[in-house]
Picture 1: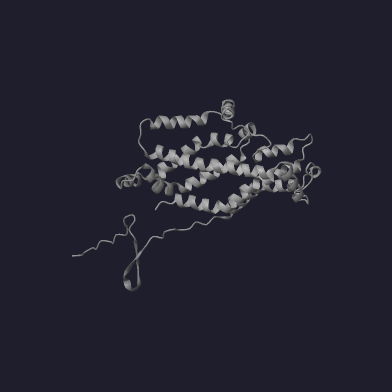
Picture 2 (picture 1 turned 45 degrees about the vertical axis):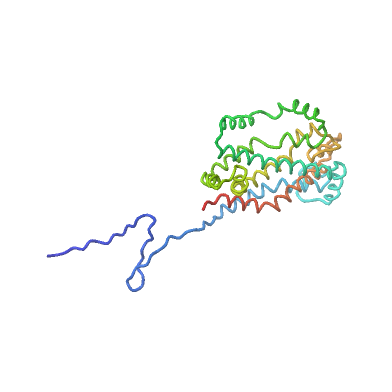
Length: 307
């Protein structure tokens, strides 16, 4: 009688380490390779280089225009290399626009608005994302609905309110109307809905922690990457805000965007002087991005990795 042996099975279940013949006829397991790195091709580097040049060119052109005189800036073709008048134009813009006081005011305004927006938006985002209370969805819809109202519609009543409080021409008139934003609340609510597991909140409840304790010990560490992003966005927006500070402040107590209007008040505008002022107003933001950019990016990447 002839016997036939069955062929060995070669298929393995998904996730099972594969076998490979080893020395001496034995078999050894092959573990799947984890953490495989993907290398970008030449086209990716070319695109990155082009985007970097397009992003840096406006700042470079501002520096070139600020380093020449008004006649040279108006010529055709315009200059593409820096001139010798950069520091003299910066000194003129600093004196004529009172940039020292304007930068201090902008730093106070932008810093207070960014800190308060981050704290209040994180508190509200945690409440809307993880707490259960009556009317939560209706209140969230009301908050989102305020984003549809143009801010220009509230300028007149808001200015009357600031005048009644005696804050006209003062920094509190700029700070208090923007202590929190609906965009920040919605942003933090969406982030915490995904990044904060319900089990962590319930574990805090089981341990006897109240809502503020849970917020301080559990929510804040989880929300740190989103808080950093929201802080940067709010700070830049508050620093560059022009319309409302221009309405409620004057030239004796300006922010940076309001002070820059003083440089273009003449009959003939000195474009090089205006560019010098714009460069002065941009430098603090560049320093902040250089100093804190790495920490913010690392925080975002840490928040994106789920163990």
